[in-house]
Length: 273
Image (cartoon, rainbow, N blue to C red; front, side, top):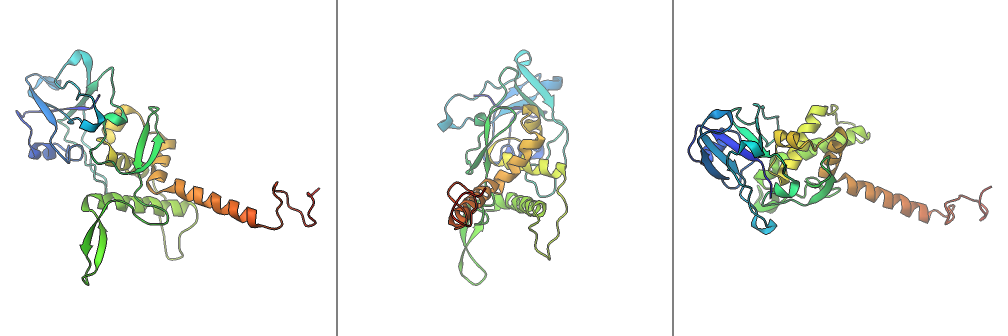
């Protein structure tokens, strides 16, 4: 099992406060990483090397964590501002990210404990990545919800708070999809989504099921201008919409009395010449 390694300088142990302070809260939101102390880490300073604890049901052992320069590649993470509406904040610039040089992490190595159902999208590493469906056509959001009481005491099912930001991103992507296809209502307006915003949403989508952010995905070199759109389409259930449209067109074609079984139109019952 491969994984990303994180070096946090200047500390002797890892607490939740440390993880949040250095901007790794989105990578480790559920439980603290496994860690070991290091007297001389990347940059020559003391600190700790962290790694995500293995998921038992996936089998295998967690990667050997520690600082082993001959076998590892380390990069200092740049400071990144969190984009509006995203749950993947930028890291502290003092944090380093590393991996075993001969064994970059694969999607199965980066699973989160809770995986949300969706579509497998083949990315540039040749692996299938599970993109969660946040907005199902035509049912609306299908992200996990909780039972609660509405304002009048009625039973309602509301989106879990931890999925609220991602649900909003799906609505943003759906609005742009409708804009591109000319489906906006008369009272609706939408600006064209920029390539930068599409990238941010695609990263957030992959981060729902995997312990990754912008830097991790850039290291893996998995996103392209083409598959980035596939990721956005998957999160708003475009494949299901396209399939339904094809079925509807086929049913209409089969029920048209002026169309013969071979698809040739004729008014007198014989193939058109």
